[in-house]
Length: 160
Image (cartoon, rainbow, N blue to C red; front, side, top):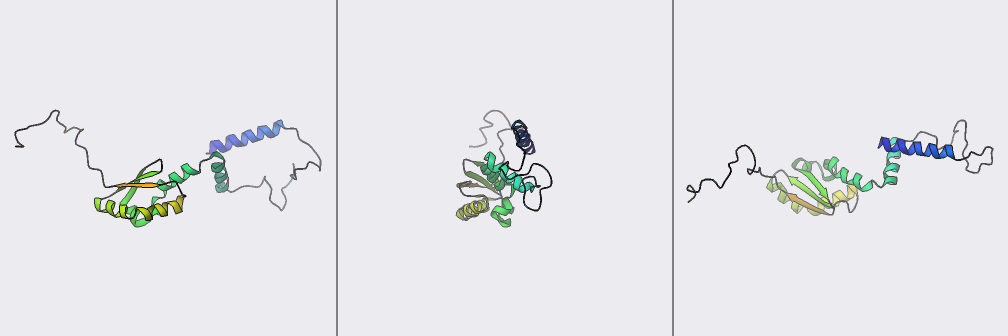
C-alpha cells in the first residue's frame, strides 16, 4: 500500500509540474502557492495515516477485500470471545464462510447460532460480505497417504 501511495504522489507531482502555473492573487482556486498554511485547514497540512489509507482503499475499490480480511483477522471481535475460542474461519469464497469447530458438539451449536453469527458478522464488517455459513467439525486425519500406508487391498481373511 505504501508503494501505491508513493506512485500516486509521484504521478500527481509530475502532473502539477507539467501544468503551467499562474502567478498572482487572481488564480481562482483559493490556494496559495508559497508560505505558511495559516490558521485554517490547507491541503498541505499533515494528514492522519488512517484517513489516507481509507481514501486510498475507497479510491482503489478495496473495501470488500478489507471486509473479508477483517472476518479472519478480527474473528474474536466479530463473533465474540467464547465462540472464537472454539471455532476458527477456514475460507471465504463467494460469500460462503467455512468455519471449523473444535468438536462436533460445538459444530452443532454453531449451526443453531448461524443466523445470530451472520447478523454479528454483517454488523461488524458490512452486509453481503458473508451470505452463508458452512460449519463443520474437526477434520479427521487421512490414512490414505503417508509412511504407514500399504499398497493394495490388504488382507481379506481376517474380516470374515
